[in-house]
Image 1 (cartoon, rainbow, N blue to C red):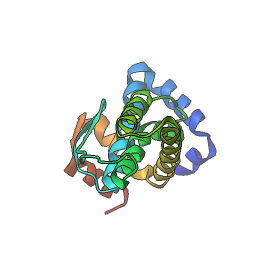
Image 2 (spheres, rainbow, N blue to C red):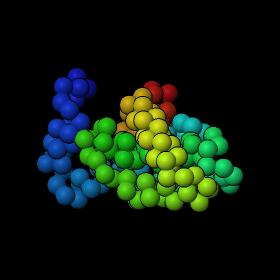
Image 3 (tube, protein in one colour):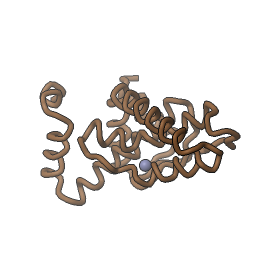
Image 4 (cartoon, rainbow, N blue to C red):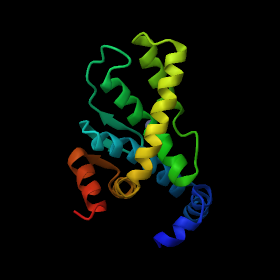
Length: 167
Ligand SMILES: [Zn+2]
């Protein structure tokens, strides 16, 4: 029913899902979209992922040397993709407070000032939102696999992404 989905706002879509699924079902649903947002954008950008669950995605980081090196900026986008996914796809906001705190902390420790942190995080959020819209079928496929199996390896994440692309 793709056509019908396009006619409602993300908020209306999220609220109707929440009403259908009940509290526990809704918690699983938005958590799966949030974590699938991280996992899908990470894999799309070629980052290694150890595993994804409904609570977290274990991503293998490089050692960052500077706050504004390309890997550090990619990491910010991956981190922003969880809340960007629930916001853009379900109208459900503020699911990324922990992610935001960890990103800020990482940038500050690498020597960024408050203004640089704010600018970089706003930019990463915009890029994450674009990825989420572009990768919506992949994110929904990874989220469905997560709800079914509760834990996914990188191979399984990649398979769910390929399935969404009809590969
Ligand atoms: Zn997150």
